[in-house]
Image: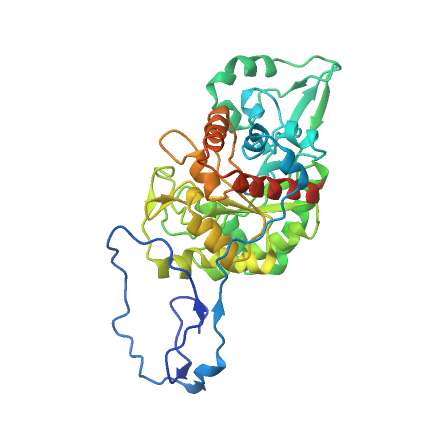
Length: 412
């Protein structure tokens, strides 16, 4: 024990007379490259330090997992949907990438409005983090109802070149008769600063405050908290993450999630699952990790948080792990996330991680990564073609669509 990594010391010894398995897990992610690991060569396992405690191996229970596919209730309206409708629902409202604004100006996405409304659902609206809610802080509404964003649209819309002509029109000056709408949100300290409080109670209060702002501005899903492990000082998103320690990270993330989801109409999205620990070449890089390291460091934070707080969404990361894109990995999404951790919400991709030279829509949906973000026609057409050609089983698509609509119903 100790109060820092530099002051820890052994205070007691636990002895078990024989080896015992405490959890039986399916092997995942064989490494392609030999990985050199750091070992403590001075560790003497036979040395007794401090008080000695004996455990009988027969008293230690073994946790076993059922790797049969988790049951998902298929909604009757999903059964009625065409392949086109199912594909459109599983690719975010891609009309937003063609010039239409989301229902909350400056929100970064929403579930397909057209499909939701046809079947009697309200589309869940998403806003990014990480230090509070990120939406357009002010915009103008003309007497005709037309919205003028005053040049303050979010970055993810600006980067789409085909929108430039439309943006020129939207960004034009508003008239004197236009109504100015303000959407000011609190800018909270970043996750790294939050972790330095070592106070889950304080961070839970922060989560409650975020939920109040979500309700005020009609945001259903907050794309936070970021839970990646800080591994390198040059990672461009370290400020979004809590710590280099999975236990501290899990404590802080569980606290903020508990605060937000105390309101049943508010959902969080834990991200970026998993091993997304660098920003350089983030859409093509592969994190090479031994399974024990993967489970004891990188997956542990997600495991603890999911079991403690039941977040409603998970965002899969851009990167590969051991050569396979995370958003296309049945090992990580089905066997670990759903079967081992018991996650029953929706899994969404990170923005534009499905693209030419990256993950393929069919691979993503076959892994039952439910929702492709941010949504565009390329992703939609690619998925629809795969469904029509039987490269994606329609039953998988129905499970994904049912989870998406079930969350929309829960949040509205």
